[in-house]
Image (tube, rainbow, N blue to C red; front, side, top):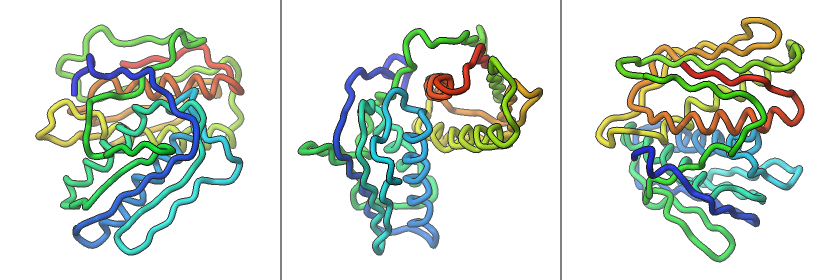
Length: 236
């Protein structure tokens, strides 16, 4: 996947069925796929695919039957390219010797193979209502620092929820491989508030991941900004 492929303006509103059926795998394979599916559902709710959202106040239905993991939800304005993020996370399960029979998304009367990766990924929201700072040079750097500065101090109990939501990004990043023969490596993340207004999120290892994955954090901050105004998002 290359940065030039990371674009899609197509959005979908309506019922969405996600299904992954395993052929075989070591112990814990079904649970791994279930966790990846749950991360995707939580990411939709959180705003990583802003302005796409889940419309029902009832939590998305996720169930496991044998070697099949299935989720049903209703969405509005979801970038279709977001399904390729889920597909990328499921494809990464092959690094853990998981073999799929099928993995698909059903959008009303249309079906999409989640394991057939076109390279498309959701773009960042255009003209975010806060300053976004990107590094000029990432050469030779296998760590990543993200800082999110809010306009006002964030209450500690609210802040803990924000940090938990941000941690979903580690699994989402697995869908952004640069070298298809090597897995994405993300590990050692530390997330904290440097001060009551600023999240400090540091990945000690961030390797073989396309920087287009940063678009998801831009989108997340746009969703947060609606209730907790943000003044600056910084990457280095």
